[in-house]
Length: 236
Ligand SMILES: Nc1ncnc2c1ncn2[C@@H]1O[C@H](COP(=O)(O)OP(=O)(O)OP(=O)(O)O)[C@@H](O)[C@H]1O
Image 1 (cartoon, rainbow, N blue to C red):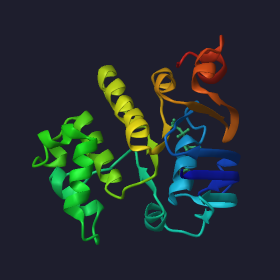
Image 2 (cartoon, rainbow, N blue to C red):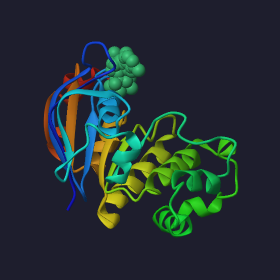
Image 3 (cartoon, rainbow, N blue to C red):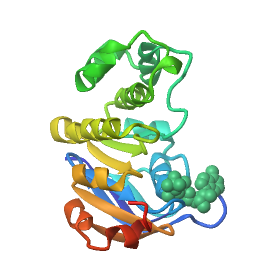
């Protein structure tokens, strides 16, 4: 059982810290949603975990291994992989080529691809298409496939449903929930579609102004009578 542990973590981009004093853990087999208003620091938190933004203080470990000094690539080797929100595929390459680039340097690329296609069978319908010609939902699935090529135990996913139609939002969230249930992968997901995310998540974290306002079982947070007003204005 793998566990990612954040201990009083602060993250920034060189100026004042954007994310402050976050303590949290995510284990394999669970899905944890990070929700909160625009600009709260949700993406910055994920980027800090992935090694794309700077951890300025606090602890970050996976099963006792200190991730703070490690590069994004080295963190992926430790099992912690990141799916960014934007520009997450090479548009001129086919889906197959995109998957291959994600396992560059490994000598078992074919086996990894077979594993990823088994986890995301819809990919087999457009493996030879250029990623730039895919629909939004297909592109996000390809990007998820690329992330899975590193065989992660903890997956960090930044707004995978951005720009997708409502039924595709549900589909993508179900795919992620299945990865936790069937492949035992721990998922930490930033999601604007808060209610849709809470129906799939085990736990949820509410981030406001870079700080943890609430952590709790997703169903409990979704049931808050003033959920929308408290966390999002009218947004939820
Ligand atoms: N590369 C960067 N350099 C400096 N500041 C940044 C950078 N990226 C984001 N920020 C700042 O960090 C703050 C939090 O942004 P972030 O994108 O993490 O929030 P968010 O909660 O993910 O918002 P949204 O829901 O709108 O995506 C904002 O004030 C933003 O301007």
